[in-house]
Image (cartoon, rainbow, N blue to C red):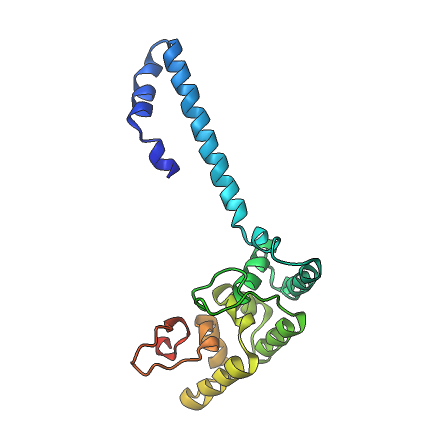
Length: 203
């Protein structure tokens, strides 16, 4: 929107013609008006960015106790080298504070529990993923922290092993390439159920 406003005929005429001669009072007033409008648009855009940044999303909806819990979960992610806002975004997408196409509209906003986050991270490490690996997995599929460890993560690892013989180093390589396989919980078998982000058909 801001870029389009610069292409107005008035601005083009002003910059190509009037800068070549001594400005009169009218042209100075016009330039001042354009500068003020541009500053107003830029300021408004900046405020909108701040409003929708991951950190700003949570402040109005979390109690003081919830914020402490949130911070403890961020501490669980500290080993993976994420910036502060990246940790907020990962937790936000995993627990419905930030909209994610993976969940669609079904994910309710939830405050993560440290024990749950830590249990999932520990389980992923047991699959042979290093801290660096986990950092990559969380970047590609932050929603993994909001998945059920029994009904999705463990069940899917068993499916990968039994159906395709994928385990050990092969499993590690697969999870680095396509960590969303940990969250698949639907198999449409060719009859689309409109939940493609969670369907084994993508595997």
